[in-house]
Each structure stands twice: as structure tokens, then as C-alpha cells.
Image (cartoon, rainbow over all chains, first blue to last red; front, side, top):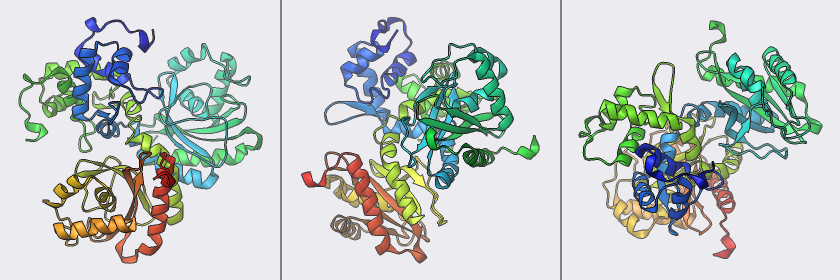
Length: 258
Length: 258
């Protein structure tokens, strides 16, 4: 069921209705009028008007001169506290910049949310590849370098379930065979780096490494994306691993203590 | 009245109560247990439990293994759509990186929210100055370079009201005299750049320039912060102005069309 076909609001709770207003906004719909919000949230216009009013007064939404609503600065300020969002990105940024200086390639930081990676940061390098990622974008785990790094270090039960599929193919090279995927994940754990070659687009290759938190668990992954045709994988692996270790240490990880 | 001394919840509306739970989180309190949230939001434990449950289920909050709540990734994803938050930052980042490459100094991007600047981005340079700004931090307009650039281009009525004060002093050099502040704002408009010298801390100087949106109005400001003792203001002004113009063009500003 899509957001356009939600049932009437009668059975939902007050918090759910307010959150439905926020959820009406996404990357395809960053600016909405009251009628759009009402339709996408599945709420009456009267209820929408009241909730949007409360959200606007608080600063979670902002209304422009044309009467169109956008996500507001106040929500962004609260969201900046998210440990897996801006807070993680703030700790990681110097290391991502170093990785960018060392490679001048596309550099990204991602975390796992369920069966997907969410990109937290993306620094654009000189190489134009067919992958266009924005901050906040999502992608399935098995196709991307960061996704393979995160999947390889997730709980065994989750890995087993994920590998059973279905595993979507984006190119003829996407890993869609459970046996091959499991073998790849073992290799990622052994080598400390994940390589995704032409699995997302025909022309791109990414090299990723896991980032560990204070408790030693993998909480994020860092990667570079380069054109497949000229990729120097052996040169990229140490740089990406170094950046991942630097971020891990900044997060409080102590390899000696394990 | 502080958040610690809010009145009982009885008179507040359902949306206000939910937003009070979100507002319980700030830079000094990024991680809270249920009792903390209840106290800071001024809500009963029962109501807090119900609202936190709804927010956690939606992903606006996340609960860690110790039962402590943090701001969640889902809220960060919605907030990433804020035109004056991550969305602006996403457009500006390449130009901020260029400014950083050109100067290797602290580079920042800020917007105005009422009588304050809010920092949207901060790239740390080689110079250690006494100013420690984090993304999401706020500062009064008259003390900082970005604040002066934003104030100088805000509506005249707002400028008049702001200049009347009170104007807080952070160092002996902070502009607290309305006449001097007005003169400074005129100079910012004339020169296209704002210089704040030792107004925030004794050792720092910032050079800022305004960023214009598609409609030509000033929507943000970009700046570098350097040690006052060795600051080369004439060299910094063109670099900062260039970065600000680059961001303005990327936002759709067309100087020719004015």
C-alpha cells in the first residue's frame, strides 16, 4: 500500500498522525502544500491543518511565501544529535577528507538500517561514475561495497536470512547467488575490505572497510567509488582500511583491548 | 522557565506533547533515559512511555542496549530534506571544500534563525583558535562574521530592532554600540564581506560573505575563522567572496538578471 492510498485516519493514534505528516516528506516530495500533505498522510484536511500548524509553530516545518511547506531548521537541529547521522558524520569527516585528499575519488560513509545501507556522507571526487548517491539515499546491502562490509559483520542470523534472498540484480554482475554471496562475505571478513565490482552500475567499482564503535561492533562503513576501467584496487584497499580504522579510533575503539 | 521546571502536561495539545519529547534532546542531553525525558518534557511517566514508544517504533528515536534513548536515523533522513539544513549544505559542500583547499583554514556555513546564526557546516582547518563551533550551534548575529553578513542583508525593520539591543559582549572588542554596529553593517553591504575581529574570542578573526538564493535574497553566509595574530584579511576576502558566489550560483542565483 502506498502513501497515496492510506486508509482514513480514524483508527490511528495522535502520535501516529503527527508522524504521518512528517513522513509525507521524502526525497521525491521535499516541498508540499497542505492538500498534498493531507493526501499523502491519509488525514482529513482539518486534521492536517491543525497538525501542520503545530509543527510549523515548533519549527519542524517551515512555510514559504507561496504557502508551500518544507522541513524546518529546528527539526534539522534535533536530528543533528542522531548518533548514526550527523553526529557520526561529524566524527568521521576529518578522516573522510584525508581519504579524499589521498585519492581524490568519491568517498562515502554509510550505516545499515535493516536490509539497506543509508548514506551519511558523500564527498565527490574527480571521477564521474554512473552512481549518483545523495546523503540519505538507501541501497540494498549485497550490491554496494559499504553494504557488503556491513552485512559481513552483522549478526549471523541476519546474514543467513538476508542471503536467502530475494537478491535484486542491478547489472549482470550483481551478486544474486546465495552461495557466492556467502563466500564473498567470508572473504570480506578475512581481508578486512569489501570490493563491489560493477554490481550497482556497469562502470563503477567500490572498495569499502568496516568502522567499529567503542564496543568493537561494526557500526558503519567507509568506501571509495572509482571507474571500474581504471580502478587500482590494491592501492585503494590500504587507504580505505586506514580511514576506517581512524574513524573507529575516534569513536573510542581500542583494537588492543579486544 | 527551564525545561526542568515545566508545568504539568494537562493543558497541552497532543502534538505539543510529542514535540516536547523531541525537544528534550539537545547538545547537552543527546542521550536520555525515560525518566529524564519525562522530567525534561514536563510529562507524566505514563504519557512519556507511550509517546517514546510511538517515536521509537517510527524511528525518530532509537533505544540502545542500556535502555537509553537517542535521536534516530529516520528523523535524520527526514531532516536531511530541510532546505536550510542538509539540503543547503549538500549544494554548498564542494565550494566549502574548495575554500578549505585554498586556505586550509576553518570554513563554515551558517543561516539566520531569528536573532541568531545557526551553523550548518564546519570544516576544521589547521589553525587552532579558541572558537569551538559544532554543526547546529547558535550564536548572536552581531558578534560573528557570518552573523554580520546575514544581519547586514536582512529586512531594514529587523536590523533596526536588532541594533537597538541589548547587544551582549563576549570580549572587550565585541560590537555593543548601536551606532558602531550600524556603521559596520553599511560597510559590510558596501564591501561585500564582513570581518569580525576578536569579537567572539580574544584570539580569532573571521571573514564572511553572503550567499544569495534564486530570488536574489541572502539566505546563508560562508566564512573562514583564523587566528587574529596572523590573519591576512586582504587575501581572505576574495577567496570567501568567491566561495559565496559559487554557492549562490549553484542555488540558482543569476547576478546578470538583477
